[in-house]
Image 1 (tube, rainbow, N blue to C red):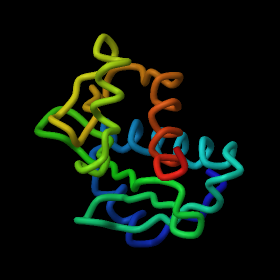
Image 2: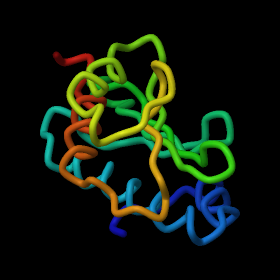
Image 3: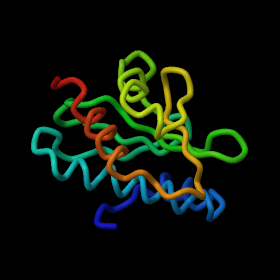
Image 4: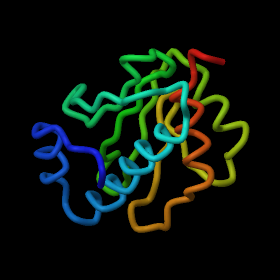
Length: 132
């Protein structure tokens, strides 16, 4: 990975069992790669929010934060700010691809192949939420 990981964030990733850590790190990389392809987003700030890895567009303020974590005993999730319309939009487009948790998360099976195309779209929408 090209981005230097914050030591506190790295510690959280290290605490995940391997079967969760691997897809969560893949999503992290996808977040950075997606942001790099969007000129309006700029650099991302990686930090911990509620002990979860969090990715925010602090400089450009173009987007809504994205957080990653386990979800329940067997899943992982990408969390979005619950007061946005992001998850509602994703549900309308991808109800056949993703499982959702209310208005706050895309829930994924860590053992399944990640739907990269759809995740990239969702990440892009979150990173540019305030520009739309």
